Image (cartoon, rainbow, N blue to C red; front, side, top):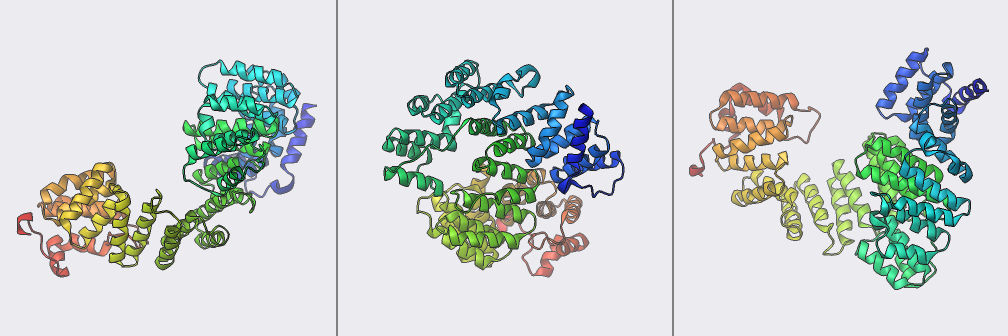
Length: 571
């Protein structure tokens, strides 16, 4: 019987899109190719190669688990489930198999089978298993047993708020909104109740109790003036006292999906690793395809793992009429940009500006992408639109001035650049990036050097570990002729940015200015070795550095018609 199951698995692996196309003709070759793909987080290729290897060696347990893991990473639980069951039938201890089987039983709403599974031999972990079983009691209609299960879990230290949050959702899912509100009201839902999903669930519960003003107060206390389409829709319904159905959790399957999603969030906050978190978010998506938060989390994790094309495909699953559509499109544009498809990213953002043009973030993101493509006029126009759409006191306003100021500087309009940077500082006076950028610009223009020094010193005080800002301090001291003071700061900048060509070049100039000529030549040589010849934006000029190595800095300055090196008391 087991052999027949394995033969069926092998046939499944070779069906459809998984017809082998690899050049490797041996099990070892396909396995190594799959392993290499998995190490590089290329789950699609990993699944293809592992499936090919497993089709040739269907009894290989290690190949089964590797293929299973690749399928789960892709969110293809329909292909993962048969492998998971084979591993379980062979009494193989596999955490991944247990994840997949739990998800498969929940998807088929086989709650009785979930309740029968033994945590010690079939479980994922005590917290996940306990919450899944509590929701399974809801699934079979035994609410009393479900509440007892939640209460039992809540007695254990460490996750009480997390468990009570799920108890509140379970009560609301069966219509006991008073019970759910009692948990939310006394902060029994813990940190999970303070998340965006938790706050919106609480507001929805209050709406079911006709406490619309209280619901609005909960939203405003958590989000303040922040707004987005989903919040706007909820607030409008509450203000009009219109019906606001509780849709956060409809049934036990959605509750189990929420277990995996909230555990994914917990694991992510504890830096468990994006890959491990991805497995939980994939299961949440599998159990509840309309769980947009799980979709967005999955796409973000894929981006972090370097799988931008998979992220693009994930983002495209958000419907145009979904309140989170703009969030998904912003993510899709960034993923496209990361894959080198900047033109497509711009097209996505321009279309989004047509449908969601009232959102400042759409225009500012478009501005960022256009600026990266050296379309400074287009970027400035986009930032103009973004600034027009935020209030004078909006926290993001200084960022928009700063971003537009950079675009002005890159386009050669120094007056407009300075105006925007000073506007940003008026809103956020000690912002280190703005202080540094404006201060450094004035240093390069050789004007207002005392003010530039003050700005950069404040920037260093605010961000002492930023190599670029420390470099600016050393460079302004150099420009002021205070060479001895500049040395320590420039050496510290090179410690922080060891392979940056500009910083190494600057240190070389400073060494030369204090008579440390051999060390200056060494730093210039290092700077040359780090220069990317295709980087047209770099301040490190390889021709100038080579000339300094040939004749020294003094001669180069003379050839350029620049003032010679001088002491601060000569200024």
